[in-house]
Length: 241
Image 1: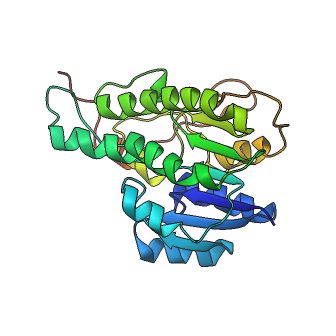
Image 2: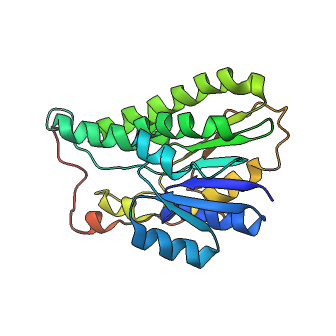
């Protein structure tokens, strides 16, 4: 049985990916910081779980030390948050960078020795990497950094037969979306999980750097806009500088 490690598997995109991989027959191990939600998610989808902080090099490496071989890694942990650059503190900046970018290095360093030819590393990015958002400077920068990291890493590990992919969605209907102060078109977590599952069918000889996902806004398959909780409390777009 193949083993999949899903970082951020206690909810949102990570949980959806873990659930889909369980359906595909993987031995799934989900990782997150909070034991309560993590245990509940693991029991619900039929996965194993390990409590760890993906931005802590020593703690994360120790937490997965019992895994001999990993066939698929999905890094879906992260943080949104943030504000305008001129208002943001360094502590706020570092919190987001640690969760979104530092964790890429921490996870990769720990899992690569356990991956073999034919294995895959999937990083869940964001459309903000390509279209930076105002009032989300740290988040946008962290995701752009993730994309650059992934492409550089792919060139390092291709000689070992390891594939690196980015799955880059636009807005996704998760709890994090509720903090956005305006309505938007969003896709479901199952859509992202479906893209990750599809990668499992791609031959390792195919170079597939990135899959971009977004909600159709016009035509017969258009989705209605999502109105987050924060948007319900405000009648304008984010405050001006």
